[in-house]
Amino acid sequence: MTKYIFVAGGVMSGIGKGIASSSIARILKSKNYKVTALKIDPYINIDAGTMNPTEHGEVFVLDDGYETDQDMGNYERFLDETLPSINYMTTGRVYQEVIRKERNLEYKGKNVQVVPDVPLEVIRRIKLATEKAKADVAVIEIGGTIGEYENILFLEAARMLKQQHPLDVAIVMLSYVPIPNTIGEMKTKPTQHASRELNSVGLQADIILARATVPIDQKRKEKIATFCNVLPERVISAPDVESIYDVPGNFEKDGLGDILCDVLGLQKRPTDLSEWQAFVAKAKNGVNKKLQIAVVGKYFMSGEYVLSDVYISVIEALKHASAHLGTVVKLSYLDSEEYEKDPKKLEELQKYDGIVVPGGFGSRGVEGIVKAIEFARINKIPYFGLCYGMQWMVVEFARHVAGFADANTGEVAPDAKHKVIGIMPEQKEKMVRGDYGGTMRLGGYPCKLHEETIAREAYGEDEVRERHRHRYEVSPDYIQKLSDAGLVFSGTSPDERLMEIAELPVAVHPFMVGTQFHPEFLSRPLSPHPLFLAFINAAIKKHT
Ligand code: GLN
Image (tube, rainbow, N blue to C red; front, top):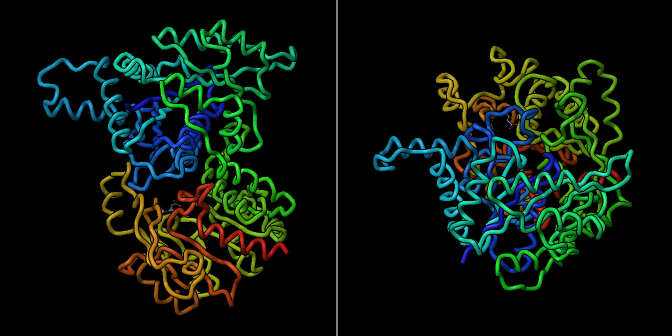
């Protein structure tokens, strides 16, 4: 019998519903249940791909090419599993399917209604994802906050599923319990209100995760229990933690796994988090060897706040590799536009053990990126370029080593004489048609590795599969010319037409590697990515 756990957020957004859902999934997996995780996002967009990073943070790409919310990345990292696109849905995606079915006469002449037909489609997708994963338990995170208009149909889907399977659905509410400075006391009233909002849509929380800066005391647990209609032991402490990877262990301190088993009528198997906790310990033990890594990119402001969420998978991948190599990384987010304004500022890069240029789009800050890459090349600082970071590494090499002074990418300078990075022909047709949504080269593709290269050595394999999200590529016209000048294309598509990895020989530079794909999407705490390991290894060598 399949079990379903809905995770909904009360009081406010941004308190870690994604990490809470991922941690629940990990705990149940550690109890030897087969678990899958789904995210439902309230927006109308069909996928996350067309949204600006300031709106949405990172766009995570699944193996099958669907562009999703970053929480899908958290699920994959915590579960150490690859998830398919059926595990992600938006309002737009759900409506698109309902309307398609209606046009196709699949409702057989019926009056198609927002309720129940939209929630029924949500339920159909949840069940399909669960079947596909052969899961015992599905964890379903409902985006947005309880009490909003936008996610009401998803809460209705949870209610209807519970009505169909009363013993197989658990409702978990993640709530925020503030401690206002002026009062100095934990206040439960916002949680009580959120609980009533949930009741008003016909749902009752079985478990409340009480997010706060500190662990919640017994008195507040009892207060929440009394006013929110749950057992006191089912109010779980969820204090701020040093690392997101601490959360599963923390929940287990309050026995969350067994409580979930009780609610769902599952057998209480022992929780084996040993492998997970070993990683958490390793991530903390490396503090004596602190590497300084610069992430040079364009930064996104939301009012006065910098959004580093945009590069979340990159940041996590760096942490995974460092933990496994017994170090920790101190990341500095450096704005490439600063190097355009004042090239003398580049000198600050000298103190870093490694430089990363992550993916990106458009022309803002790109000349500053080229300067940073040139600095890394000349000063032999380990460099790792991801997608856009690889394309600009190729441009920098073309300009300053291969002698194409005006080299550029077609994305930024369509009229440049030497477009060493050009649009892929099939992408060009799509652009002409204005067909933008979900049409990049997306998802997993094979990459052949060439002998005696850093990449081949790092992977220890002849062919790998990596995830993509791009419209531009190294122009076929320049592959030979750049190779003749000393750039090594160590990874290519199996037919050798698309350049997937570029690097400089170790005799020239200790680690100068760029990938057309996004290796960060495949890095997981328990299985760090080979290229991130190789990069951090090079940074350790530079550090010592
Ligand atoms: N803008 C580049 C392209 O479309 C790189 C994309 C990326 O970094 N994800 O090819």
